[in-house]
Every structure is written in C-alpha cells, then in structure tokens.
Length: 147
Image 1: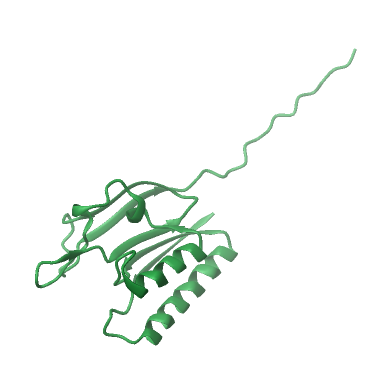
Image 2: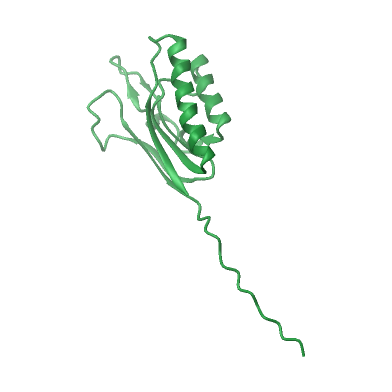
C-alpha cells in the first residue's frame, strides 16, 4: 500500500469560477488515479476558502465527500481560535489551509503553527496520521489427529 501526497494552491477569489472548476477537476483526476491503485491520499495546501463559508467552501465540501476524505481541522477538538493559518494585512485571521486525508487513516494530531517560517502571510499546517496495518496475519493450520 502506498501513499500519494499532493500539495495544492487553489485559485483565490480574484480568479474566475472556471479556473476554480479546472483546479478541482485536475485534483479529482489525481485522486481518482490514486484510488484506482489502492493508494492512501494526503492533500495539503491553501484551498483559499473557509469551510462552511460561501460557494467556494461548497466545492471543497463536495470534493471531500466525493472521495471519502477527512478534513481533521473541521472536526478536531483543537479547532478554534488558534487554528488559523492565514492572517490578512488587516490582521484578520482565517483558516484557509487544510490537510485532507483518506478516512481510513487515523489522524492523531492536527495543528497550525509558527514553528516553521513560511515567509508569507500563512502559517505552517501539519497533521500526524497513521496508515492502518493491513498485512494479512498468518493463520496457523492445526492438524487434527483422529484416533
């Protein structure tokens, strides 16, 4: 079993909806190819939307649902004031950056951090996840002696 890791930067609201549709179309092709070959999916990046805010977030929600992905930040107990990943020039903070993973992966940690200087108005976002151990266990065959 392999893992496909994809880094993305979605078009921001200054771009046309057609360019956003093209972005999701290309991303869907990558994920479909990976799922055909039983690959776990990890997608991280700037999706330029907040979950549950506007039509752009609906596209992200639909994408997550279509490919049975999990957005840990969306459901994390850690979600809240410190989970922002973007700060505007006016000081407004938003969570626009996400790590999406295959639902079968166990996410143990998700955070936005200042530990790595990205040299931009975004903070570093990371997730720790475990891939399930799917190796087949040997089943010992017992020999039964009939007397």
